[in-house]
Amino acid sequence: MIIEISFILHLILNLFSFLIVVLPILISVAYLTLAERKIMGAMQQRKGPNFVGFIGLLQPLADGLKLLLKETVIPNNSSSFGFILAPILTLILSLLGWSIIPFSLKSYYANNDLGLLLLFAISSLGIYGIILSG
Image 1 (cartoon, rainbow, N blue to C red):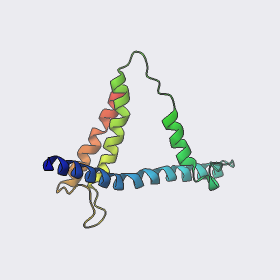
Image 2 (tube, one colour):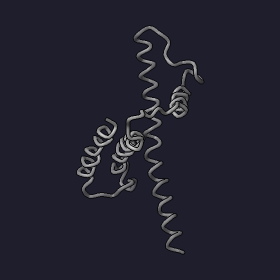
Image 3 (cartoon, rainbow, N blue to C red):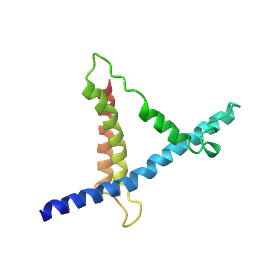
Image 4 (spheres, helix red, strand yellow):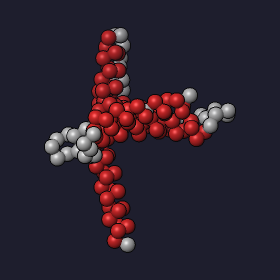
């Protein structure tokens, strides 16, 4: 019983530390996309995404909510398992590459002596999501 509780606590701690690494990355990508859209709007002399929240700062959240609420269309003659698994696999593998990057001397998610080799291996597995989606 004690072993099961320690295993669950260790799993929760690992998940929490992974989220500490991944969430800032996802948020920064969302706001870099917002900056790109604003710059492109200014270059094309049109209004950029300025309507959701104060000067458009809630636009990435609105875009994410829109993508979550869209209807999923699965083609009839396709493998529905592969059709759903392919983008999930690609996203997980792309985020897993961040787990071996040390952020300071004592702050890292995975302590690995062959970190660069592991990064190359994880990045080469990302192609399987693209092949599976085709």
